[in-house]
Length: 187
Image (cartoon, rainbow, N blue to C red; front, top):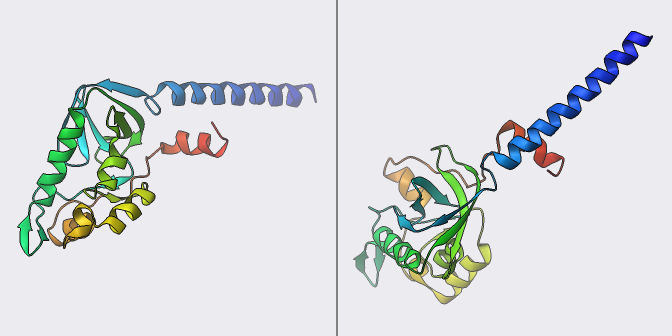
């Protein structure tokens, strides 16, 4: 009996140590990390900060090559989205809170600067659609017929599918096995 009790105690101690190691890895492993500094727009929903590619979480913009129709005329809505993000980035240094990576190994993050939450601004101004976040901002943009909502356009996901471009999944940060386990326990 002494051996089985000892084995159980060792097993419990090992489990506690493993859980502690997992928590340390989660806290120090990039998820939740904040990057700050000057950034540049790659397109309407992706930026580069300190050499890191960051995909703005919770929204989606038209692709750079995507053309929409406004008042019967072509409107380069993808280029307009990138131009607006670039303009917002000029408001000053940004802070991006990393929340995982997407299937392209880009960081998924919420970013803000003096202009506010960049994703919220892009969706509220109608240059992005809600994609796992910012539903209230999209309702406002639709009601006010801002940007895309005052034009004829294909949703970015549909445009990518029609034009043979890689598909984006709704931006749930991929926490991995460890993150999934820790999320279930509230860590």
